[in-house]
Image (cartoon, rainbow, N blue to C red; front, side, top):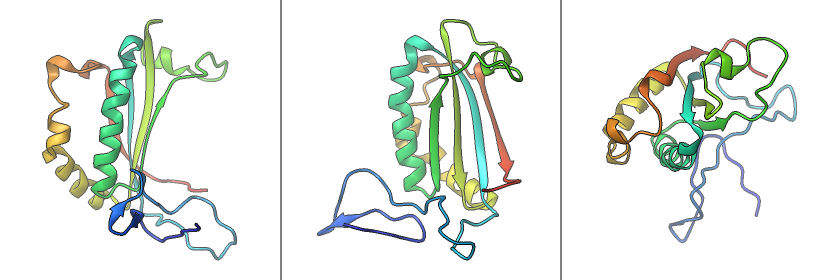
Amino acid sequence: MYVTALGVYELTINGEPVGDEYLAPGWTSTSPHALRRSTMAYVDGFVIVIPTKNLAMYKKMAKIGAKVWRELGALEYRECSGDDMKVKMGVPFPKLARAKPSETVIFSWIVYKSKAERNKINAKVMKDPRIAAMCDPENMPFGMDRFSYGGFKIMVEG
């Protein structure tokens, strides 16, 4: 099967979803004239320090988050755990985030069509019962004092 789309779509057969993935426009351009993602895209970025023992719990939450944000219109949702952190150039993420040896740095981002879309989507996300069920401050896999977040304009896209 070959499927292509401009936009974000859910593949169904006889009205039933095929898996839990969404088809989204990719980053690859086959020619200088190929359709490209809007340069008005907006990104929410996150750096989170998590006790390594809580990674499984965080991953479970992140999978739910990915599903909710994508269902509500986010173009991309990525959660990455630190791997090659002993770098010689610049300030390594663990040092920048003041991570202890027993902690892992998470680097995440969510891409939206625009800042206005981001604001609409995030308002819906915060009202979603699946997200609310995960936001008990007494049962989080990380402390909010170790959570960094901000919105970013895309400067260069390649």
